[in-house]
Length: 114
Length: 114
Image (tube, rainbow over the protein chains, first blue to last red):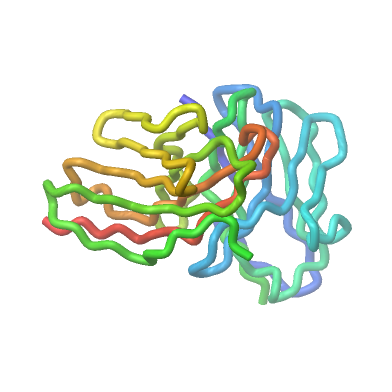
């Protein structure tokens, strides 16, 4: 299989705080990991692509200083939402691939900023 | 401008019958297409994919058809089962999905009635 986990599954935080979301590939080494965001009744929007040991590549319109991505190993990538605001409330999903063209997705993290 | 379009937001099918989900794309550079299934508050689950060098790919009850000249692909599920009820996303990429440039449609919600 190709299992990707995310932690936490749900987080509620106060405006102005930072939140870290972890994405792990459990049974394979991921050459690349991706972070998506999904608003209600909308499609998944790619935020950034990260490769182990190098800086993430952000999509146009995504603030790299706001959404910090660290890809420390072949099985772990983290997304930190810094100084979160209510408009950052969303469903964040990571995915990973293992050298093929198919991405395997994590279960997602529901972020609510009060 | 949407590069991947799923024009039917919802589809209702009787159990045992065929479900046909459609997807259109505009970018002729897309060479790899995927279908994902998604339950609420969960990450997408990979179903089936097809490369542009093929026009059909089959996996059990799932078959994907690709018509490059029409820039159209479809997912057939037969026979449909109540457990197939979910949102189905069509995704496309150029130069292989490993580049991270998976472009998703908005999804079609499939309801399979017993």
